[in-house]
Length: 218
Image (cartoon, rainbow, N blue to C red; front, top):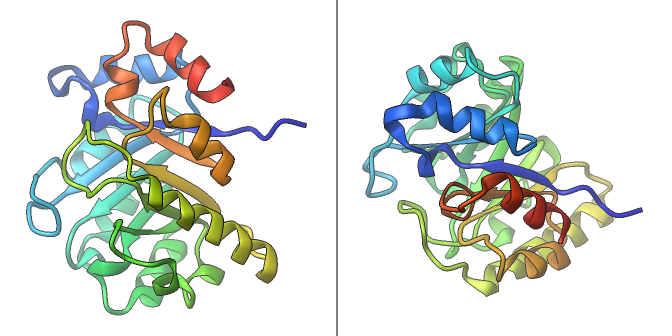
């Protein structure tokens, strides 16, 4: 049986002046999740939005909200993102000292917990966290801006994670974010992803629904 890969279009690439339309485009395309990139202008260069945007989107869709916190001191904001209706909250291993504690905060609040690493961080930095997370997000570009090219070497991390997952009998999903498009999706699938985030490739397509169909089923 062919493995089902989930698509999580990134709202970052939608029209911020009409986010509701962006959510409708995601739903009409049959995507499984909505990906929300929260940036603080410190951990990454850009500033995007906070928990109020998540709350507003929550009121407009029943799709799972995959919230990616690219922020420093995420522990100070977990409660707000839980209250906003996040289904997944992913923190960066590079942005927090007591990661286990923050992961437990997310789970105690009723959401699924994820951890992410940037291209320069090895998978070995996650070894102690893997038994406790529901999602591992591998950044395949340096975070902060959309439309970048995928760094192929980052897919080796996906392969390593799949090996660790099998060896340790773990059940976390593996997601990638950055530069996923028609020219890179097959290599991503071959590496063993479960979820992929698509921003400009999805919202920049002439027909996002057709693009979603191709990316998921090629």
